[in-house]
Amino acid sequence: MLKNTIEIPVRFSEVDSLRVVWHGHYVKYFEDGRESFGKQYGLGYLDIYDAEGLAVPIVDLQLQYKRPLEYGDTAIVETTFINSPAAKIIFDFKIFSARHKHLVCEGRSIQVFMSPQKQELFIVNPPFFEAWKKKHKLM
Amino acid sequence: MLKNTIEIPVRFSEVDSLRVVWHGHYVKYFEDGRESFGKQYGLGYLDIYDAEGLAVPIVDLQLQYKRPLEYGDTAIVETTFINSPAAKIIFDFKIFSARHKHLVCEGRSIQVFMSPQKQELFIVNPPFFEAWKKKHKLM
Amino acid sequence: MLKNTIEIPVRFSEVDSLRVVWHGHYVKYFEDGRESFGKQYGLGYLDIYDAEGLAVPIVDLQLQYKRPLEYGDTAIVETTFINSPAAKIIFDFKIFSARHKHLVCEGRSIQVFMSPQKQELFIVNPPFFEAWKKKHKLM
Amino acid sequence: MLKNTIEIPVRFSEVDSLRVVWHGHYVKYFEDGRESFGKQYGLGYLDIYDAEGLAVPIVDLQLQYKRPLEYGDTAIVETTFINSPAAKIIFDFKIFSARHKHLVCEGRSIQVFMSPQKQELFIVNPPFFEAWKKKHKLM
Image (cartoon, rainbow over all chains, first blue to last red; front, top):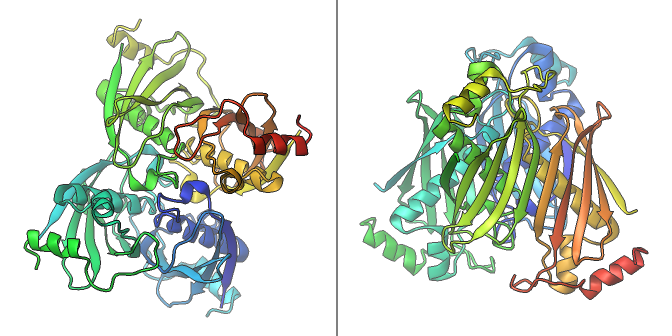
């Protein structure tokens, strides 16, 4: 199972008037997780774009908020690659409070492969992604 | 069916390097829709907080991205109240491109009622919400 | 004197744990003001880019914060074009509280003209800008 | 001279349609710099608030943009404390491109001391700040 973990200190600007991280900022934390995963495993936006000229837009995003996260705390973001035969990149996320050691948010993002002109959606996996999966023993 | 519609011009700062709105900004558009709904029907964050001392945190958020939205275009956000017997505030969102007249994003948010100390979750509807529903013939 | 005025309701996500607009969000309000000015007077980012293929990056930004702005209030943004012989676009901004009728922030932005390849800085005004100034009796 | 240096990888969501960091995001980089400085030297928002019950709002912010910063690059933020007899916290910022080793942005922020009720502005340094300065041989 391919997984990346990063720590993101909560920023003052991310905390709302209830003194907890505003729910929309978790979308950034998820993207920080995806980018960190991409760096570790060679599946970053620029890796994909430079290698193949492909964009990988998000088509589905789900977030469940379990507990608040406060200023002064640090988000621990776990990003896990979910293997699937579909021509999609699927990640699951779990965000933990470093201070309280409990889950604060979890979710999933689904990306597809598109040509830069954004007209052609790939319905089978592009060759680079099959090669990437083979390299990581995912197929 | 209670519904609010607002128009939000796409800002330059919201557009990413692919020249379309970055997916995380739709969370703001949803919140703009909720706030506009709240103003129209008297269910805003401040209405609830001032009347009852309650916070209504988001516990679940789902977004499906259908098409890109470009700089120069305007997002038309439709926010619809979804009636439910549960002690929750549920909204469905549809975002349309004003220029192309097609759907670009849809989704749902679910909020719960909490005391400001954030310890007590309401498992039945607070009285003000029942009164609000009666006023709008939702129960 | 060319001036544009817009109203921007303060969003919940823009308010920090002190219950006032976080200082960085005023940069967005300034850009909202510039874009509204651009629409009114035909000097928007896309007008310039489409007509001339030029970008107009910010090179200098100054903000003075006078008073806090609260959730529930509305920012009134006044954007004034500052005429100058230099090859620059200069705007002054004043942001007022709609509720309290006082100044909350003021500032200035300076933009220059660049070719899209971002290598060539214009040291004299490009022809379209001279024509725009003449149309508005600024030269 | 008290100085802190941090590295901030440029996020995909921070890059605009010209493929460079949108100018407003540098305000966050400055705040990241201030927070990192605060952690290193014991002058964070929470240190000040917890010790003294004081807020330290920004009253003046200046940014000069020198060169663009691209996705894939990392911002190196240098935050320097500027000593002053006034009842103010002044920081200078320099942001460098890790890739190109040149300056991309510089600026200054000025903060004042206020009671949480935000009515009383301190016109002399609060005792904790004098003690902090003495500890760091700044007075």
